[in-house]
Length: 64
Image 1 (tube, helix red, strand yellow):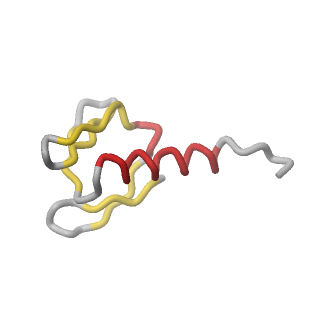
Image 2 (cartoon, rainbow, N blue to C red):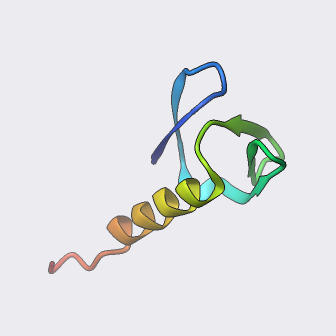
Image 3 (cartoon, helix red, strand yellow):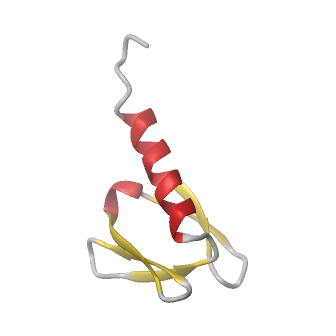
């Protein structure tokens, strides 16, 4: 799960595995695999970084 911020300043948590794509139009829009779209304050690169960091933690071998 990653924490993002709506344009009104309200933080929310999203399952990063459900992100289909992210675009910058110029606001950052996160598009889910369900078709839902959310505009967030974070940059496209920040959303990518958080999703990648989340994936690294989740897919880390149990032996670490």
